[in-house]
Image (cartoon, rainbow, N blue to C red):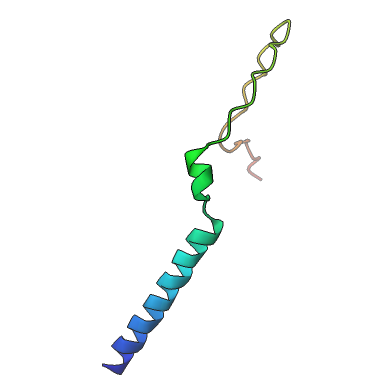
Length: 67
């Protein structure tokens, strides 16, 4: 039973550390009530640029000479 007790203590310790980290690194209550306003939309460019060539997906398979 000693190993189960030790495991329970260590589990509670890890849970306490995780909870403390959530409070430290999480958003503050004022940030939850007052979210930041989105930035004003920028002016659209005069002419739309042509779409770029599609990017090849997956591995490039080349034929290898059979020597």
